[in-house]
Image 1 (tube, rainbow, N blue to C red):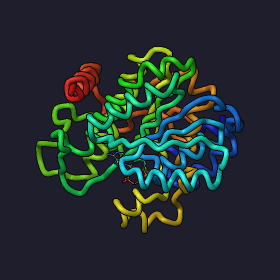
Image 2: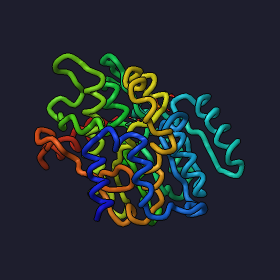
Image 3: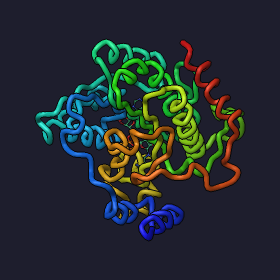
Length: 315
Ligand SMILES: NC(=O)c1ccc[n+]([C@@H]2O[C@H](COP(=O)([O-])OP(=O)(O)OC[C@H]3O[C@@H](n4cnc5c(N)ncnc54)[C@H](OP(=O)(O)O)[C@@H]3O)[C@@H](O)[C@H]2O)c1
């Protein structure tokens, strides 16, 4: 009871909860970690796996015995990550797959390859993320953050549905962000065409969409546990390059990449998340999706997000 109250307090207080303090305090009362070998014979695919949290997630899954597929837009960076993972875990099975999540064509191609090569897929971790300073459109005409965080993952989940459902305990994990708490579901303007573009706002809006999309996929993929999570604040190239001032201020209390990736890895393997679906997690506990009243959406808004994704991912 006391631990739950302290956990909630950390969550509401944001800075201690999202920082390393939250991780260190909460891990004292966590259930047992998944055990090495628990994912033997299973495959876990991680997008944006050459760096930061994605690479740490791939390492975490490989430590549990999974064969890992690193879905990277730059295969030379992917191969570099593969070499680093194998240096640590020489027995691991690690394959690099070219995939630009912001390109529907690229997503379709990698999904076809994975369907051809894998009898089943145990977990798909949607980790790839961007925070562009200016509004950018992809070659297919979509705003970059929505393409990378929402449309690519939506299409990839859809295309990999058959191999996910072939695993009797499959998981899909959307790596969102605590920043999503600041933004509502802007389904009236999903590609940020109205008003002055702000990269941080666009990032947070699309991270909100990921949380809603996870709930929607939970309804559309029976038998697969679909969750969203946020990692807190972790020291990664993404944070230091995209938010240098933020990284400088909170630098000393940032989590390391393994600590940031902990819940994503845990969601791929532990029993509790496998027995539920459609939740939003942080530090191995389900969390509220809204703290601010103006961020709430209606079921109709969620349906509009689903329809927008369905229409926008038709090639
Ligand atoms: N670190 C944090 O504190 C924090 C907090 C909240 C949420 N997150 C989320 O955690 C995830 C990982 O972030 P990170 O901090 O680890 O940042 P990171 O080190 O910059 O990693 C981002 C990864 O995504 C890849 N990526 C970006 N666009 C891609 C695309 N179109 N196709 C394929 N891969 C793409 C990057 O590839 P390249 O190397 O080729 O650029 C990189 O591997 C992101 O979704 C981020 O929003 C992180």
